[in-house]
Length: 461
Image 1 (cartoon, rainbow, N blue to C red):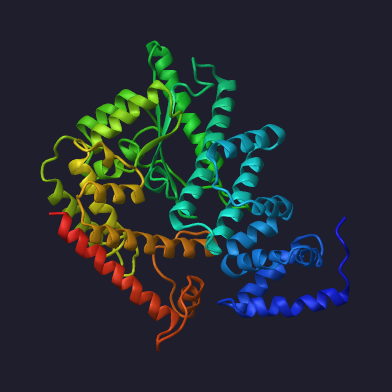
Image 2 (image 1 turned 30 degrees about the horizontal axis):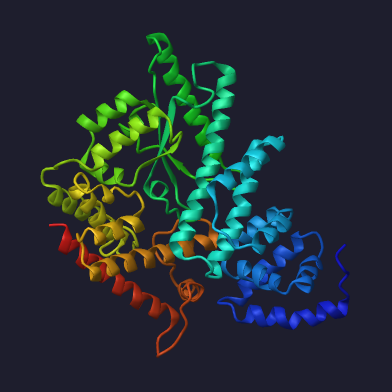
């Protein structure tokens, strides 16, 4: 039983609380979130009891209150998460995908509401990842990797549930086990580097091998329903928000085709109809669901052959034209698309992977951090340019992560007005040398943008 906390004890803790909040970028914002959290923990004194037993609890909840309205909302909605959340903080270990998969599987089996089990697992992991990120206990690549691990495990559980539910409606050979289904992750999910508010870019691919024409037609309808059900489970809006935003538009023919595509059609599209930009996009693609099946190996071979061809005519010119087209329609403050944005770094590396990947298998890395390192190891970029590209990529991804951590929403540009200075302080900048925190952030951002633009002009030619 927790010891009671007297009014004198509470009063004695207030100076520490006020001192902590006074050092945060926005004390009013911190106190507002702190008050909301304490009000939802069952009793006003509960959080103070936690602090009395372990003073580190003040930093734990204080950092969340100071940096993230979104994570504060999760704690407010889920006061029952607190004990599990605190337990997870006792040991600082790398998030293991197999362990998380087993935990979620057990949670789903024990729950009468599968969707609630998915939310619970996601929320407790987001709180842990977010806190370690805020307190700088994990480097950026590890934070992005762990966000991806959580999303993958939740995605797998949603697909498995969709297969079970559709399988009860219609039995198809191998369908209930997902043996004839592969799901490809694209973009940040494929590259194992999700932000807090990244979309999940997915392509559902099924196989009809061994099925007669009648069963093959039913398979298309079956896997289309699975794709729809899994997508709806993840992205349907509720008072808790969506688990994840799902984007299925990167499948062959986009919105003009069914949500699930047969593997023969997928291969034919890549070989005969796909656009140049899709080659670059496929350097970030990998199979997520059913990664050890014959179908997954077939899909992986098709993706590698398409993204790393022996030769592509005018690849540099096409890449430059594509980049110019994106920049022409981007606001100047867009952190991804404008000149010097993330796309400059990504297009450099994707172009080099496309141009050299067929002869240098080490370049076939879906992860951007790993791909930048592989390009350096293969001497396709200089050590100095490796450092510049990596620095620019990491800096912008960190800034975007901090914005998304604040409210759980995607942001491609810095805040404006008074919020801009507050954000710069949340991002770790402080006034000094005659410059505000925002001015220092912008100065560093401009440095990285200039490096990224110079690298693009140097290597994509």
